[in-house]
Length: 289
Image (cartoon, rainbow, N blue to C red; front, side, top):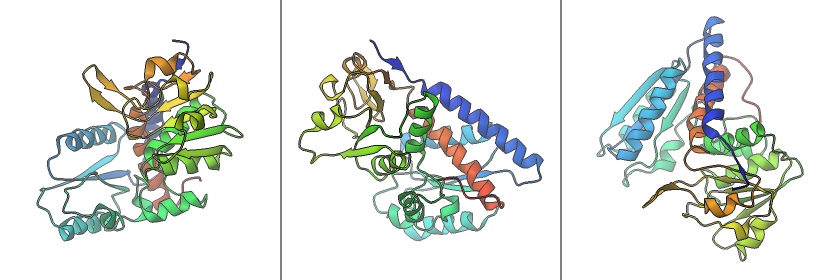
């Protein structure tokens, strides 16, 4: 393997330390302690683990934990009522509706009831519009975490060719907008892209968020490129991502492992967003574009 590994665990630890310091400073200056409200509907095992980890990280950073758990039978009106209650509570800095919700609920409609300045997942239409227009706001955690990783490893984005594989509203689309805001030239690839490998080979930075196990191999990676793997899948040999890691690591200069790459950054940036939201609500400027 010639590629150097991008250590997302170490960078996430630095972000968490920064957040804990920021929380302590805010409180010392007379501000309210930031609080994160997580809403879990139903009993999906994976969602339970994700929420538990978020709550633990919140407490470790010195934030208040406002957790709400609802049964899988909860109605749209009941979930909306909980969101309204949390939205009106000035002790709550951020609201996170854990997705997916049970099939009978309309998650997109529920997200519209989260105030944009408490939308720590960065998924509301208001924050998506702010991102598209380059205005200050809260950014989706995983794409924001990827930008932080690239900054930590001094990967230049201005003038770089960046290919994003995937166009989901959770990762692909906001990822493209974030690197565009850093003056990269962006190609978004998807299921209708005619020659995926050729489009990817042009990239100085390749970000793969397709949700397809081991989609990208060495034939799609230019020698010396930086490769970020957002996927995580469980197979017979353990966890792996959207790239064929051993192949890609032979030609890339930097690559994220799975696990230990992008994953740890998501919760770290959630904490970052919660602190930024608290500052915003208490009179500071909106989070930087």
